[in-house]
Amino acid sequence: MEKKIINTPDAPAPIGPYSQAVQVGQTLFLSGQVAINPKTGDLETADIQSETHQVMHNLHSVLQAAGMDFRHVVKTSIFLSDMALFSSVNEIYGKYFSGDFPARETIAVKTLPKNVNVEISMVAIKV
Image 1 (tube, rainbow, N blue to C red):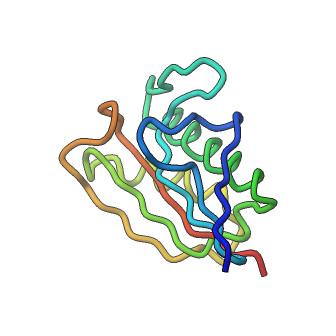
Image 2 (cartoon, rainbow, N blue to C red):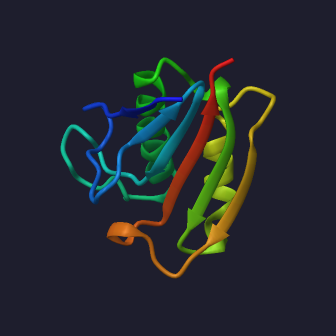
Image 3 (cartoon, one colour):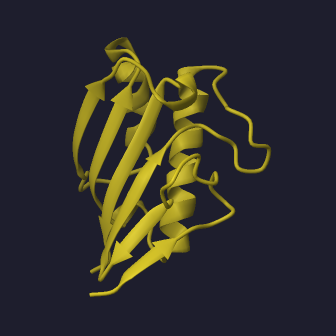
């Protein structure tokens, strides 16, 4: 199977040696997104709700660039700077899916890139 790199200007450019997503066959592996506004390059971290919305918007843009959307997501990984943020992030995250939620884990870590509070990665499959 051939590997296809997915990059879109509608999501933040990678801040390291990685791609926004890699597609192999019908499976799309999305790199973790943080709350960088792709139009301004600024972090959207006024509060955890707006930060989470920006992360989800970024992920949606990458999914769209591959011809997919949140219905295609089968697995997510959520990384938090503090597990106390879990319920707020969970509430916003859940609004982007309608039933048939993907498999998921949520992990608290010591620090995240750019000292953000949330980073989310995904795996999606086009069937």
